[in-house]
Length: 506
Ligand code: GLU
Image (tube, rainbow, N blue to C red):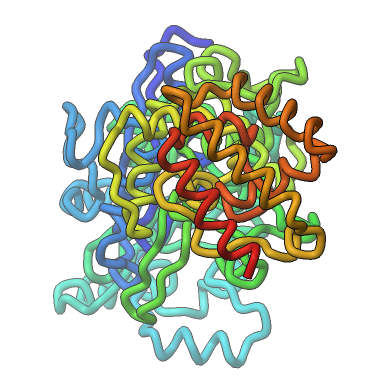
């Protein structure tokens, strides 16, 4: 590591919901920055106005907030390199593009969209580059006086980089090692558009330079852009300041075949967004991890393991542990398969791990949304502690906890009725009678009484415990049945036995 201050950036384009791969990119940047006491910057790359989606920027910030990936500098918390939205930096970029033209590393191109379309149709694999550029309308092919005239007339034009022929450009990627590209494979990318907006290629280089970015983690899909960026760093004379790159492995579909796309979410019924994403155009909402009942701790933990491990077999990490254990050496080059079952496993583990208090607000909302009124937070907390080990998703708290707040509306009669007898009715009436005499139900005492009574009546304890559970809960699930009765309390337990006896004897 050089002694340069670590400054990393997450630079999403606000073109829609942030795919979980994007959140992982943000996370890895963040972990690296925090590990080395550096800054994590959020820069919004919104120069492509055609792809701009209203609400996407706010959504990105909500996602980062939910995950606890908090930027040190961002459009809403600007630092000294403001502004942090590229559209607001528009006036900065032209100077650099013009400088490249002056140096002969870029040129003006006057071709209209129609002319370019025609070329694309007529010439297979057409690329604006060294093979065809001389036959096109640009400042390299046209005579100088004509170029001057076109510019004087404000003829719409773009500025393109002039990719050199027959060169090899290389850099050392922090994950992949030495990576090389042949310039003959690269086309003359547009740097500045006709409307004066920079393209991604120019803006990313200029801003990484001006914002003093030291390291950059980004998705592998940006690797093909690297040669353009390398040349720009070089031509602009900033090579010594170029950030160190790390291109993260792809996140693959669950079957390992190809990159996980936003469309796979809908196709496979798995979330690919952190938060619910409302697409205004189609009017559809795609459920994200949060809406599905994930804890951010679990989501972040899961994301961190998509392409990284600490080598010890440890699977559960807090954010602080991730920060201290994160290392580039342990990021794999190979794509990471998205395994939704594993994500669910992380969530279940995290629900077990956190204190009930941490879950209280979310569980309260889930229950209240289902029409349950929570009158007593202490009671809610006890319920949460009792059932949380049985929940994989936060939404599971409804089926797992609702019966602590309202008596079952339905009973699993198939589990009771076929073996229901008069003896069992008598048994439960006796249980009621005995419980009426106690001050309050104690789980252990009730269990002892219950078992002794069963023996006295010649019944197997198991044969009456299941119906008892169904009386209290409605189904064959939940924690220890005597714990449930104790928590429900004497009145409620007796009431539920009475109510169920009517149904069972019907
Ligand atoms: N704006 C690019 C994106 O949308 C950033 C790529 C990069 O990090 O260089 O992901």
